[in-house]
Every structure is written in C-alpha cells, then in structure tokens.
Length: 226
Ligand SMILES: CC(C)(COP(=O)(O)OP(=O)(O)OC[C@H]1O[C@@H](n2cnc3c(N)ncnc32)[C@H](O)[C@@H]1OP(=O)(O)O)[C@@H](O)C(=O)NCCC(=O)NCCS
Image 1 (cartoon, rainbow, N blue to C red):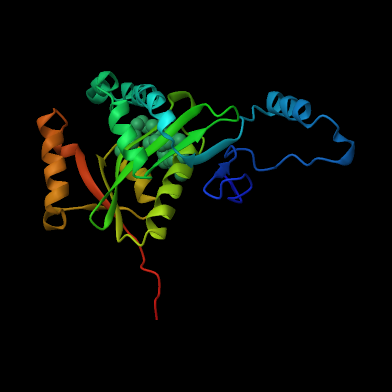
Image 2 (tube, rainbow, N blue to C red):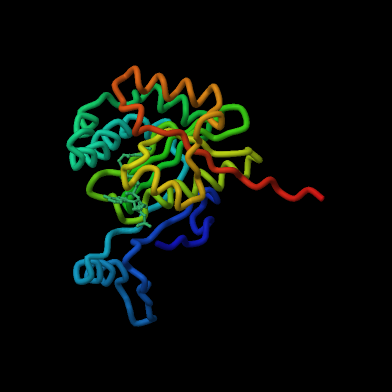
C-alpha cells in the first residue's frame, strides 16, 4: 500500500492509496495518448483495482455509511459464534452526521467518489475514540482500513490529543491483532478507565461476549516543545 502526497488534489486533507499488491506504478510516456484506456487495460491484465481516496466525510455521505457497515459486518459470518453480528443494527445516519460535523469521520471513496469504507470517531477528553470502522466486504484486505486508520491517527496527533482508543475483539484477526500493528495495546484491569469500562459493560449488556472484548489504546507522542 502506498500513499501519494496529500494535496495532490485541491483539498490538502485528501490522501490517496493505491492497491497494496501493485508495487509498480504505471509509467506514462509522451506517446501514451489515452491514459485512461491504458489504465483500464492495465487493471484488466493485472487485476489492479481503482485508486482509493481518503477524505473527511461530508454530511451528504452519512446516508451511505450504514450500508457499508452492513457489508463489512458480513466478515463475521466466517466465525460461527460471532456470525450473528452480521445481522446486527447499524449506526444511524443521524449519528453519523453528528460525528461528521465534529470533523472526526473519514471516508474511503473509489475513483467515482463511491464510498467503500469509513472510520468514524469522536473526541472524548484527551483522546480520539474510534466508534465505527468498516470497509465493504469485497474491498477488505486491500489496505483501505490501514489507510483510514493512519489518517485518523495523524489527525489525532495534529490535534495534540494524548491517545486513540477503541473497543474490539481480542481474537479476531482483523480486530485487536490488526490494531497491535499500529502500536495499540490491550488495556487490562486498572488500566481500563471509567469511560472504557462503561463502554465494555454496555456492549456485554447488548450480548457481546465480554471475555472476547477488550479496550485498546494507542499513546500519541506529544510534540517536543522544548
Ligand atoms: C477492520 C477493517 C475495517 C479493516 O479494513 P481492511 O481494509 O480489511 O484492512 P487492511 O486491508 O488495511 O488490512 C489490515 C490488516 O487487517 C488484517 N485483516 C484484514 N482482513 C483480514 C482477514 N479477512 N483475515 C485476516 N486478517 C485480516 C490483516 O492483519 C491486515 O494486516 P496486513 O496489512 O499486515 O496484512 C475491515 O476488515 C472490516 O470492515 N471488518 C469488519 C468490521 C470490523 O471488524 N470493524 C472493526 C471493528 S473494531
């Protein structure tokens, strides 16, 4: 997966991510003429997927997010005891609009600006808390989640926040083990503050298997002010 320079497009807040398996970028020569036809050919022959752009979500994106959550959740059908999660309720567009208004929701769109994933968070005290994080089932495993998470962490740093937190499954490959790769650690016992403890117990009340759930935290280095 590769980022191209933010600011390539008008909005400095936009970054693009290419397909992870495509290590070589197409090189265009003056004789290329019709670049999009060549790109289409290249995609067909290499299985290369279109470029994905990560940008802040807009209010108009909110209605598309529950459908992405629904699709993403189908991944849990692969785990028999958690398969029921695929049929759970989704976050409402209204709630998405609130988080979008806070400027803490980022969306991944394809080359036609169709949303394929999002990360929705909110600021809780000195932390950025990730509420919902989903990539369409048929786009999972291609680096989009990584790009969204990197974008959220970068934003939390820019805001001078102390940490990023979330709750997730300890033993699902695309949950805690994925966040660990970014430096998140699982909080145990007294490390779990009141806010996160209350989220975990709320989840348990809604039928989540408490022993498999955990709270995670990524400490953010404070900028050196000396
Ligand atoms: C979690 C999620 C948003 C990650 O998005 P993604 O686009 O699939 O993530 P990436 O392609 O960037 O993969 C990142 C890591 O996830 C893990 N991963 C993703 N899909 C996986 C799968 N099907 N099986 C095993 N590991 C997987 C890998 O560890 C991968 O790390 P790598 O890049 O070192 O191989 C996405 O898998 C998803 O929507 N899952 C269902 C909903 C969910 O669990 N959301 C998170 C709630 S806390």
